[in-house]
Amino acid sequence: MGNVTAIRSVDRAAAESPSPVPSLKPRQAYVTVRGLSKKFQGTTIYDDFSIDLPMGKFISVFGPNGCGKSTFINMISGLMPMDAGEVLYDGQTIRDTRISYVFQNYREALFPWMRAIDNIHYPLKVIGVDRKERRRRVEKLLADFDVPFDLNAYPYTLSGGQQQTVSILRALVTEPEVLFLDEPFSALDYEMTLFMRERLQHIFMKLKTTMLLVSHDLEEAIQLADQVVLLTRRPTRVAEIVPVDLPWPRDLDVTTGEGFITLKRHCLDRFWREVKRD
Ligand SMILES: Nc1ncnc2c1ncn2[C@@H]1O[C@H](COP(=O)(O)OP(=O)(O)OP(=O)(O)O)[C@@H](O)[C@H]1O
Image (cartoon, rainbow, N blue to C red; front, side, top):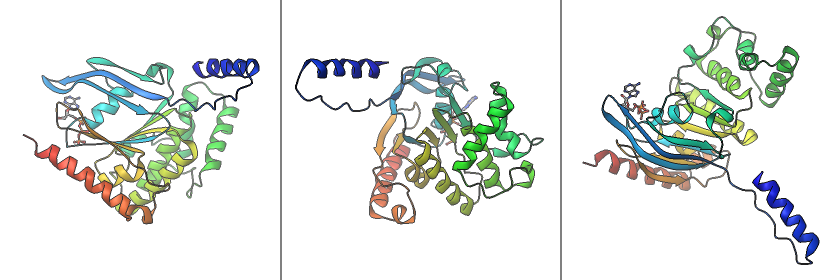
């Protein structure tokens, strides 16, 4: 609404004044987290934690073991209650924001009694989209992605990477504004992990959906992100937000290039300082 009002007032100004109209930059929307606190059995994980994350960007979250990376995205995605705090997505609460979640454990995430294609249809069915419209939306999604295996297969007949591809497609079918990914590739072998990172980048470049990724793997965290959020040990704060100004797609040339190596070294330094801190 704010933008519409701004554009209208500039139009009026243009009509009333001969001076050139200043060009309007699109407003950057943010996920705003304020005063987030969480304890588990007396142990403080977060205490009055705040951060702003730009929407439409790929953000990865990296930090020491057990610092609360998964807890963070579970809370801001509404999967886990916070003890205190507020999270807004471009000013809207989570209830008014379309979100999806891709879990690490694809074996438990897909419905084994449904074919892959029916797994992808399922979220639309839950929100009451009729069969014809469901088919249209799934076809539109699949047209964008070259899926190199049979979606009529049952999940157990598919490889880990294929199953995780189905999970990602299922997460995307509702056209989420924000996609949360909690170590989505950590259960895959190395070859499949590299392949899936490439695929996820292409999805991101095409859709520009806000992506929030938790990763244990610093290379992955850097390769996929516009910004890496480095967290401290508990009680967890932001150690640093590292911008990743590297060209997309981050292919082998990029990930073995000087810019990437410098960023990795910087993040590792910060990480070690944090891990060794008394
Ligand atoms: N439901 C829960 N009940 C009790 N403690 C929990 C619960 N969930 C997480 N924890 C604890 O909170 C801390 C943060 O957990 P979390 O899984 O968010 O960390 P993480 O940074 O994602 O961990 P890792 O690096 O091991 O994946 C850990 O010490 C964990 O044991």
